[in-house]
Length: 185
Image 1 (cartoon, one colour):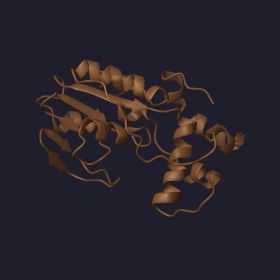
Image 2 (tube, helix red, strand yellow; image 1 turned 90 degrees about the horizontal axis):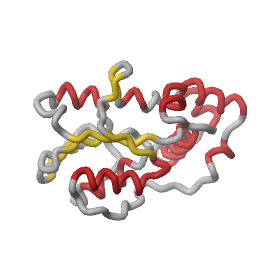
Image 3 (cartoon, rainbow, N blue to C red; image 1 turned 120 degrees about the horizontal axis):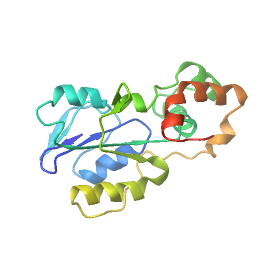
Image 4 (cartoon, helix red, strand yellow; image 1 turned 45 degrees about the vertical axis):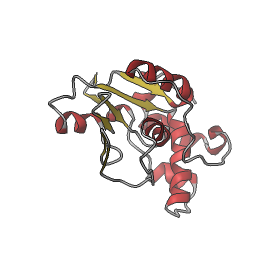
C-alpha cells in the first residue's frame, strides 16, 4: 500500500494485522483478502503482499523519501493464525501439525530487508498493534484512531496447538525473526 499524499509505504506481511491497518489508513478500500490492484484517491493498493524489495524496485524514484513501515508477529502465534485462515478461507481441513510441516511461511524479516539491511523506517508488533499504530499516525501527522479488527478468528491461545516437534519446526524456520525481534514461545 502506498499513499502519495502522506508519502508512506505500508509493507503488509500476512497475518500481522495488516488488513486492519489498511482499512484504518484508507476507509474507502474494500478488503476482500484477495490479491488486487486498485487506486483510491492518493493511495495505491497493489498486489496485497509485496515485500520491501519489490516496492524499492517498482517505486525507486521515491522509495527512499517515503516513510516505510510494517508489522511483525510472534512466529508461533502467526502460524496458528495462518492455519486457521487456510482452514476457514480455503476450506483446508488438514491438522495443525500437517500445516506446520508442509505450509509454513517464510521469515517475516525476509519481507523487510536486503541481506542484513532493513528497508523500513519502523517495524511495529502485532502484540502492541494499537500502540504501534499510534506511533505511525504520529509520524505521518495523522490523527490517532482506534484500529478496526478485521479477519478475527476464534481460537485458543497459540501455545495450546503445539507439540515439541511443531514448536521446534517453527523455531528453526523463523530463527532469524526470533533472534531479531526477540520472540519467545
